[in-house]
Image (cartoon, rainbow, N blue to C red; front, side, top):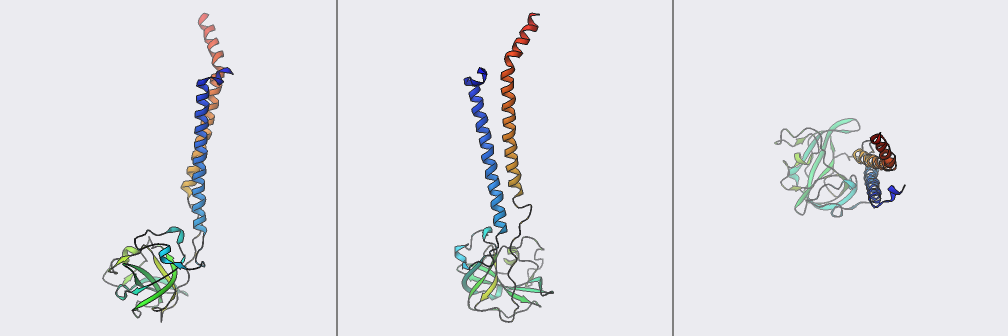
Length: 246
């Protein structure tokens, strides 16, 4: 037993305690990240009180993932020449088009889904407008705009919109809920469905947490084996001496 209380042994005990504490804390940190990701994904902000767009993001800001679906308000000026039609959009079982026009806010333009139309044609808006709508991230999937010369695109990809709008674009778009102008003759687009929680949400962080705790358990196992070796060392030494003497 005294061998486990020597200065060398205490250094080993302290090293083990530090390794286990670090593994536990890092595992808890990864678990909190995983839990936070799931909580953010589970939030449905579509019925929250509208907030000014400027309080959520600016023209050069990356998309704020925690604000997906949040109602925002802003005012600006329509850029009618940037109007595009997003194909393949359903409305009461009928395929048609989203009518999208950008609104210039300062030096950047926010694409606004004004409504739904059965054809790729709608009156162009002009002048000033005040918008209240749901903030959405650009669609990352879907076909690229293979014919940038026409005004029909296949998805709400911000990269596709840049070919039609002669202004810097926000890294988002807004589905209009209420507008002071520009939606006449168009069917209203329903509120976007809130994000759903997937079993894979933050899975990597959960696996990292498990991995850190495994390392902590392994450190304890190594320490126990080391302690046993230290306790058995006198007997092993005595056995070796007996065999040498023989």
